[in-house]
Amino acid sequence: MTRSSAASSAAVHDGLRCNSASSRSTRSVVASTLIPGSSHRSRNVAVRIRRDTGGMTDQTWNALLRDQFDWHWTHQLRGRLDGLTDAEYFWEPAPGCWSVRPRGTGTAPVQAGSGAMTIDFAMPPPEPAPLTTVAWRLGHVVVGVLAMRNAAHFGRPATDYQSFEYAATAADALAQLDAEYARWRAGVESLGDAGLARPAGPAEGPYAELPMAALVLHINRELIHHLAEVALLRDLYLHTHATDSVRTTR
Image 1: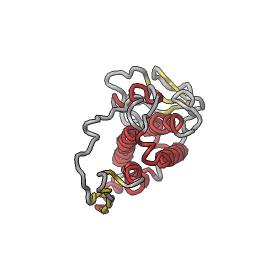
Image 2: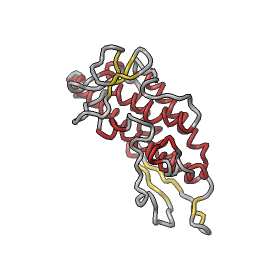
Image 3: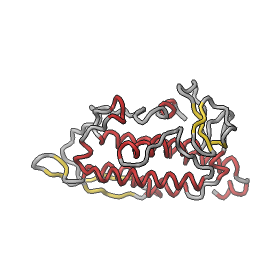
């Protein structure tokens, strides 16, 4: 867990930072984009330009923002989470990890959650912040990155770190992730292009005046960041728990 991920646990808007200068493109023409894929596959994405105004055609910006993460999710990420075991989910790769635990068994300053499981954290986070398990990282993504934003912007029932029921199994955590991501993606699509331009609003605190497009970009970054950490932890688990015969065949 990084300091930024711990800070983003405090409120819906925490961590939403978008450099307005860097977010503006000076290029007027983009013919195609080469996007690398799994197993070195690639694809060309045609970008249609409306030359009379220099803008994109209807829905193109929205589709591109969704595709930035959705393609990664479909072709590179989600399959890597299939088969996640409970042993991997709760594995603590170093002493003092933060995790999701049965209620009453944690030692972190804050143990949040409304069900049988609670998630460890502290506000402000200690320095250095503890390493976190796959369970913790998935809990953070499901609640702090997706569910709270879905509640703030797309009609999901209200939730937060204190009121959420954290998953006691890897399978349940992945089901929560799939459900919240599907709701987020559908919500972003429903914005169209006009909705991307409107202010994000009070739920995003000091970033309320930034456009929804900035929030979508931020969520894309958060998802790529934290779910890449989950994939790496799976690799570490495999190579620290595999038998010698398994290691030699990979």
